[in-house]
Amino acid sequence: MIRKLLVLGAACTLAAGLVLTWTTTPSKAADCSGGYVGLTYDDGPNPATTSNLLDALTSNGLRATMFNVGQNAQNNQALVRAQQNAGMWIGNHSWTHPHLTQLGAAQIQSELQRTQQAIQQATGAAPKLFRPPYGETNATLRSVEQQLGLTEVIWDVDSQDWNGASTAQIVQAAGRLQNGQVILMHDNYATTIAAVPQIAANLRARNMCAGMISPATGRAVAPDGSGPTTPPSSPPPGGGSCTATVSAGQQWSDRFNLSVTVSGTNSWIVTVTVRSPQKIIATWNGTPTWDGTGNVMTMRPNGSGNTFGFTVQHNGNWTWPSVSCRVG
Image (tube, rainbow, N blue to C red):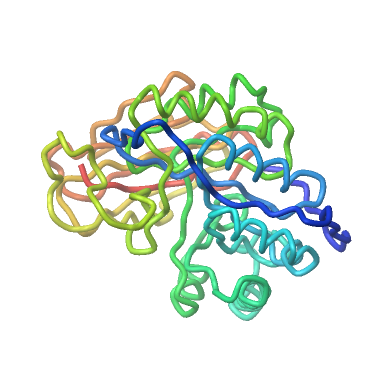
């Protein structure tokens, strides 16, 4: 289970005259022909780390999406404005970081709405993006998100910084990012902040750029929301957007089944990330491939339609894997 540090009720003091602005002074225009990725940082703002993170990002010409916890935002409004002034995008990460799938609709509504209000009070704009704590979601939560005009954003790559990953391991995880994908990182780890310069260098080496997360698709696009979401040299993807809906199947004492239905396109790529120590032990109606860790499955159509399934051996962790979809 992801364990995250929440800094609640802490006073925030910024050094007088400190102004964080997002600027880049490259000798030539950045080459983004490899596409765009979404760098995301959860659980801020935190007085001990947020300013350092913003300094690292701006110094390396990177922009990111900051998924703020509502209580942290309420108690540290100057830091929320610093995020905004640094050119970052700000998302909703719930008020207290609970397991939202264990709450009723009214409680979920309060968690999300209070955070919307706190961030709007600090920045003048309500978020359009929402990251569910622990990546846990269900139909009730998605209904509340829709009512508040929020787009749910999970992730394609987990940096594992919350799980004690070293700076080198975080950099290596970011190196797996492909065009349009999103990585999970956190605001409050020194190892994560130290990884920023190397992440920037890796993206430059691959002709990739840090982009915004589109509220329309939940995928990374150009920072102004325009332009192709695949490299210009690549053929355009099949038309339509891509939505993956997960539903429960049979379950037993040691394992459970999940079914994924894709809508919006017949040419899809679905990424499924299990939560250690889970393992996927069976699949059907799709063609899977795996990353080196065995924790990330990429599923493509095999001619059996747009619904596929898999069996998770939970090994004590019943939380559903995160699932994301992109057009192939």
